[in-house]
Length: 408
Picture 1 (cartoon, rainbow, N blue to C red):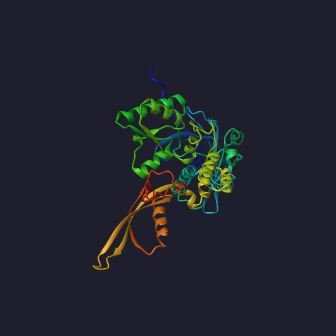
Picture 2 (picture 1 turned 180 degrees about the horizontal axis):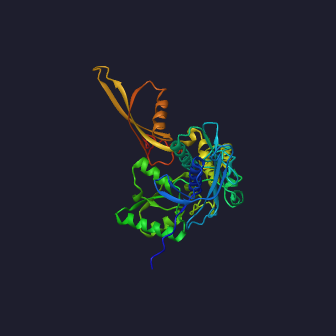
Picture 3 (picture 1 turned 135 degrees about the vertical axis):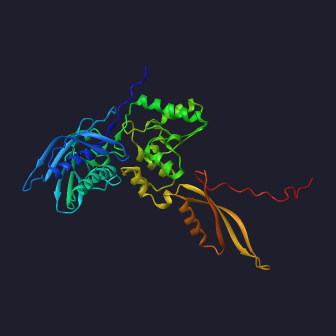
């Protein structure tokens, strides 16, 4: 019997976008809007119902304020926000600017290192863009050039947020408005694992013996942008890294390359093989431990423990602490032959520890400043070297003639 296809849902960001679109239409036309179509960041279109419409009038025929809501649908994803109402309230303002803020039930950022600055509503970057797009398009259609204030709220948000990681992360008072694609993909564990296994078998059937594995979109985007590796050549494993590795072993895979955000992959370094936050979250503990092993001062490691995210911790790293890669640099020292005057090049190899290719060239040039030699850089290539340690052993000096002075 074929398995039922799991239903997709839509994010709180999509709800806020659709509610804002409907509210803006009612603000400028005065007509009731009970359904809207919105275009998501990747071009997909959704038709969503509008509910709980409220309009406020003063001295004009059209409303000065409109509020309406969209009911969140998480599909077959086990999400505590399923069924909540996400409201958008729009009103005219004299500022000439579009201002987006959070109201009741939308969290407020209180710690650095998150998607939004401290003090801002926890409405992430992509949902803000989606909301702003709807406001700008509505204003352009009617030729309105004044200001618009948008307030997103979730009446049940403060209560539900207590069941999430928001308070621990430093988001207080409510939920976050999230989403990068606008769609919630179902997270049924067995369905996902089955899909991962199928993807793996497809890749291995195409004669791949080594697999590239990415937990999500961050790794997929990085591979495409940096190495032109398409999504079809990558196994997407979600949070099930341990089970994916086990399946790779069962399929006689020769090796795997994990590509993803440090905040997810650092958990694997601590033996956490399901990286969902509900299972474990010791990112900063592992980050601080790794820092101590790398020789970072204890005081700095304590600072890492106080960070909210790994991105925040990385920003606290100095350039030297962030330089975790080794590059092999080929140089040519340039000299002149005293007799013929001809230019002579002598090749040499130097290892440089740096954060990236540009940093390696910069550090190489800085290191050569104290020399009198003319040189040119022939090549700089990243190596597979993980670390370099000084040799502390005593050098054994052997005599040139060990038997000298001996008599029979």
